[in-house]
Length: 446
Image 1 (cartoon, rainbow, N blue to C red):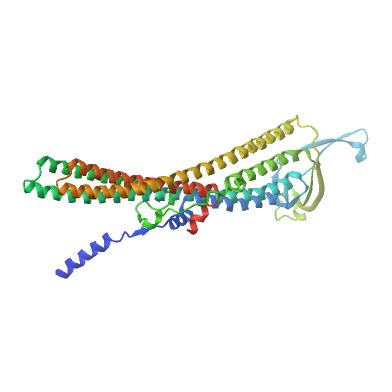
Image 2: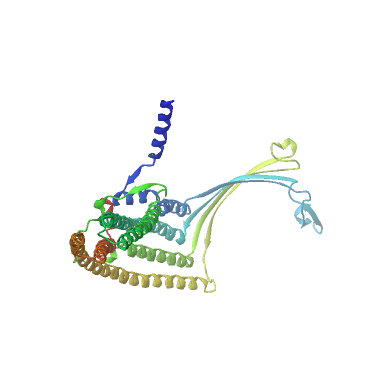
């Protein structure tokens, strides 16, 4: 019985620990997202699909071969009135029926485009489409990296705030023990003990709020990673280091993925215009066919001349030339619409370059300001800690009031949270700076 109980306890214990905590560095979080997030997967599928689009366009330049067959029954055969002179009966009219009750045909036909400007233009556009989706895939990956990095650092900040609250709770409990000891010895008032108990209760409430914020932020991170929400994650303490950035180097925005994508879109619209203009060109194609036909009063399939069924073959080869002459100015209108779309994208290119330059300038400014704030808040937090230590000693010695002690605790908590927030602003600005230089993928190698 004892062994059975022990086995049950071990089984429950193992079950409780089955959900392992996954430690995530920023690089691991990004790589996981690139492999599992739907946005990244769909972008890769579009690149794969572009290969099939090229094959589809290329097929228009290849021979089109098809087999055909039919079986026709004519209950009433059409008659034709002809001059009897052709049959040695001048001055008479003959009404003759041409054809048989049953007709069966089987054959093969071939069509080959010899000259079709739309096919040639389509091939160039298809290859450009593949390049467009390759750039779009790169942009999708960068967007995934940016979202994951932003949420990763926000989770870290919430966890840091939780650490600050836990530290405050621990320190306040120490003060409570001191006041309770003084109260038990008649050296402190009950109102002082009540005030510290209220403070502890408020800290517990704040801690629960921060715990909720941590959970919500972690869920958001897991969503942007494409990770199951029930997965337990942990972020290493070393993930929030503040390092120098190269701020003097001005990036070449024309190499940014967003700009390159628009340039490729401009090229696609150019080919679209060329495809419309191709409607002005003539088209030339080759047609060939070979057929076998059987006719008779009975179903031809399997029939022989003895049954009145006769089989014969026929074939044809021809060239088809189509020369457009007038389309009611429809083609001209389509060309002008395509030209407007090209000019619209060109305006987007100018605006996008300005936006990218602005993003770099703002990120640079935010980096400078955040570094200054971090240094100030770091010193401020250290000073607040020293003030709290001195105030606590003075309170024990009766040289400071409880209000002074609580104010000092609040000041330290605020300073520590301000420092954490400043570091978050720095890291978010750092991501934007890296993005503005087109180097988001370097985060994978960090």
